Structures are given as C-alpha cells and as structure tokens.
Length: 270
Length: 249
Image 1 (spheres, chains in turn red, cyan):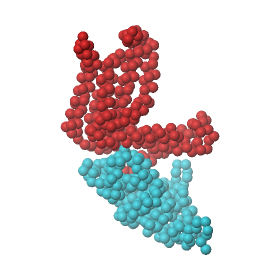
Image 2 (cartoon, one colour):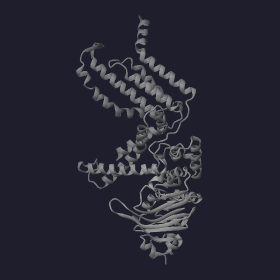
Image 3 (tube, chains in turn red, orange):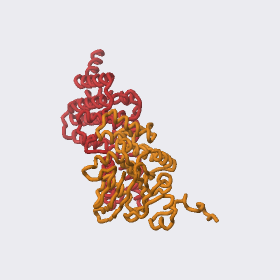
Image 4 (cartoon, helix red, strand yellow):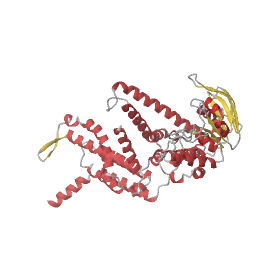
C-alpha cells in the first residue's frame, strides 16, 4: 500500500514540475520536442566504443535542469528505474568482447568494458533528456504537438488516456490492497492464491471504467476521432532555440570536443 | 419536451430493469427520479440518451425519437452528467475537457472558445481552466463535468446522482448553480433534500415501474408510500426533532 502510494506521488510530483514558469517551461513544446529528438538521435548514433564523444552531451541535461529548476533528485530517482535494464543488457559485453582496447594507468581495459560503459552512458543521457522534457512540458500540450508531427492519433490518444487514468488505476489498486490487508493475516503483499482474483478484479474494474469513459465521450459527440486543440504558434525565440541547440548537438556529434580540448591542453603543455 | 411512452428494458442477463414506464416532462421544468437501489433510475437516464436501447416503447426528446439513426441530434440536445466525474473528465487539462464536445460537433476554434468560456462562466470555474482534472476536489470535478456538458448548449440536462462525491458546502453550491440554469433537467438521485430544494415534481420508481408521480413535498410526507417505495421521509419533513441520545418528548 505504502509503496503504491509513493509511486503515485512520484508520478504526480513530476507533473507538478511541468507547471513551472521558468524559461525552459515557457519554450514552445514543439521546440523542446524537436531538440530532444535530435539529442536522442545524436547520442544513440555514437559508435559503441566511443565514450569521450558522449561526455560533452552531459551539458544538455545539466543545463536544462538548472535553468528549468528541475531538482536533480527528481530526475535521478526515476533514472534508477531505467538503468537496470541496460545494465543487464550490457553485462555480457565485457565477457564476450575481451580484446584489449587501451591501458588506463597500466590496467588493460577491454573493448567489451568500453561498450558496456558507453551503453550505460547512453542510457543515462537519453532517459534523463526525456524525463526533463516531461518535467518541463505539460502532457496535454505535448500530446497536441505529437499529432502535429504526424504521430498517429490513436497512439497519442492511448498515451493521453494512460497518463490520465494511471493515477486512478493505481489509487483503485491501492484501496483494494488496503481492503485486502485489513482482512488478511499477513501484512506484506498478496498471497499467491489470491493474486489471480485480485488482478482479475482490477481488470474487470478497468473494463467497467473504460466503458463508462467511452459512453461519456460518445454522449459528447465523440465519433472515433479526437480533435486536438490547435495550440499556440512558435515564436521567433523558439525557432532560434531549436535551430541553435540542434546545431550544437550536430557539431558535438561531428567533432569530438573532448579529444580537441585534450590535444589543445597537451599541445600547450608540450 | 420529453416524452417517454411504455418503455420496457431488460439487461442481457434477464434482469428486468424497467417495465411499461410512461411520463411527459415540460420544457424548462426540473424533475427528479427517485427510488431504492435497483429501481431503474440510471437505466432510465441511459435509455434517454441512447446509451442503452429500449426493448419496447418510444422516447422522444424535443420531437426527436431516441433511435440509433438519430443519436447525433439527440446528443446535441441532451447533456448527460455521469455519476462519477472521473468517468467524464479524461483529458489532461480542464479546458480541453470542456472544449471536447463543441470540437466534436465541428465548431470553429473561435466558436469553441466562446462556448467553453460561456460554460465555465455559468459554473463559475474560469479559475480552473488550466488545471489537471484529476487534481481537483470532488466539488470542482463535478462543476467541471457539468460545464463540459453545458458547453454543448444542450436543451436538456440529465444528471445521475449529482450530489454524490460532494461535501456539504459543494453540495450547497451545486444546488444554487442548478437553480440558476434554465435547462430542462432530469435528476436521478437518492438525495431527497436536494429534490425538495430543486424540483417541483418527482417520479418515484419501484421495481422498474412508476410508483408515484407528483409534488415532492406532498409525496415525501406520506410515510406509508415512502416505506413501500423503499425510501424514507426526509428529516426536514419529519415532525420530530432529530434526537441525539435522549428522545425529544
């Protein structure tokens, strides 16, 4: 019960952040959507052994979090949910790809270890970029922009409804849990023999809810096509932001700043 | 305005919810439908807006029969406010929910804006415009749900248990908001005090049949009739002080 309530609160707290009024929040959602998309492409497209090239990309999440007044804790704690997936996906790399890539202070580092680290870095960068987008943009405005870039309406609709009813579903599950615990000896979890009934009950309730929501929509003239609001126009500032930030990403993708700075320093010293 | 003629309805599981129900409702009047649980109130409302289709009989609203082919016209005329506002408010922003109906009926962006503003003004909820529906209080949700229906400029409002989920103050606000609306209203409810405040006429259902039809103040006083309908005389009409521990006299 307490776990469920905490996760509900986590979802809500990210949502509350989206209502902020900083410069990052005021940017047009389309500008943020495009820059995030370009950022993701740039990060993902790096070679699997390339770590130094990824490093400069940390500037983006750090800058956005500080300008958008998004607490590090909010992003990091959610990042932890995604990390195990790529951790286990990349875990085999160091064992399979054992050729020595370089020596770090005399210790040999294998190609596998490099690709494992770059995978983890990519996860951290991409997931935090998306979390920042969500924390700085209200969901309804984001959904409207998704239809503008021709994401099929049915997907956007699914996204919106899931987002809207997730809290109701979890609170329904939470109250069922409480009712269950009050009548069971064990205070932890649900006993295996009751799990089926519990989930079934939750599913039936969701069906009932879905049906009522659908009828309510039908009663207001819904005919299978959700009409999204037109949304505001992008201002010159939004264009400048989107173009310049994307240009920076592409430059960082093309030229390895870490290597350039490194050679500059070496050149200065030598 | 509303004509219900010999309506019967059974659920697929064989449970007979309504049998041979008939009544007429005049334009602009506010009529309550009361009855014990399972008397057929919600079924009746669902039939009136075409969510369910009657087995027998005809329902006409403003001269238009409620049949599958004319549902669009019916839904322009009739606004249905669901019992649980969470079933009705599905968008991430209050304004989008209120604009949902007008947008579906193909009005231009400007007209949609005007209709939504009007509806918000009627329910006095302009300040909630940009809020997320699931973070509102029960009373606020109810008002938004009603505004979402009013935005379509319906002539008839059907309200299913409108005072559930409301605290006493929100309930009071709801009653005063309702009394100011000129629409023809049909209210299905257990809240008999609300009926006394808002309605000049009440239809009492029992086991799917019209059991009594008349002035609420008169019918509700009749203890025998209320008992037989599975209801009880509301406290404000009982000729006794509400006792707290010691009986009065």
